Amino acid sequence: MAIDLTAIRNFARETLKDDTSGHDFLHAKQVARLAVSLYEEDHGRVSEQDQAILETAALLHDTIDDKVVADVAAQEVLVEDLLRESGIAPIGQALVAETITHLSYSANLKKHYDLPLLGQYVQDADRLEALGAIGIARTFAYGGQKGHPLYDPAIKPVQLQTKDQYRHHQTTSVNHFYEKLLKLADQLNTPAGQEEGQRRSAFMENFLAEFQRETEALSDPAFRVQ
Image 1 (cartoon, rainbow, N blue to C red):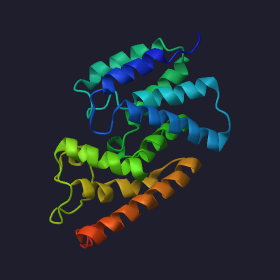
Image 2 (cartoon, rainbow, N blue to C red; image 1 turned 90 degrees about the horizontal axis):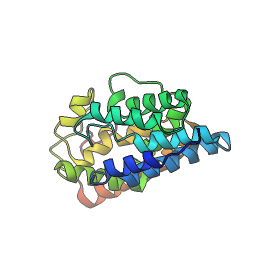
Image 3 (cartoon, one colour; image 1 turned 45 degrees about the horizontal axis):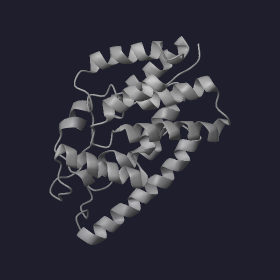
Image 4 (cartoon, rainbow, N blue to C red; image 1 turned 135 degrees about the horizontal axis):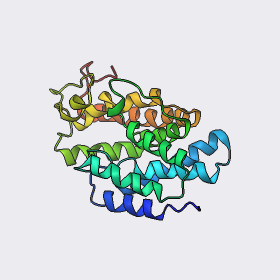
């Protein structure tokens, strides 16, 4: 059976079309592009089956996330049906399902989940989208969508321990850099991902240094990576 990802792309586009938090279809497509690019940087040309797995997991990774959809269980059933009809071998379908279930930052707060190799490239690509210039843009888009203040020196960053705390604690958009984003480069899995992560993380640190120069809002030692 030939691999055809048309239905998967259409499903991701339809699911993510109204998102304004930085988890839209453009983000999904960028994660897919990055995942393939990182894999090829480390391993050379990717096979058709592996590229399909990388792209499928990337396109679907936010379609079962409770940030985006109200009924996660129903979405998971739809995704299982899509995968069965995709032409991807059953072992590849299982790999996609495993990856998108355990990929997110919040899913790894209590216990780190070791993804299979292809899943690691998708996870790294997703986390790279939270770093650099695009990461800064998405941080403020997400904060605005959630009603978070831009910054507030009186609200200090905290050490996040659980998914519930991560989603519901009092925070600001600038705090998100210290609570999560500046930690990501050290958590990347792959050689290509790690190299790009360090570059993008340095860009964000320069942004925050300029933010401090302009606002003097980050003088408290709490505004450091814990």
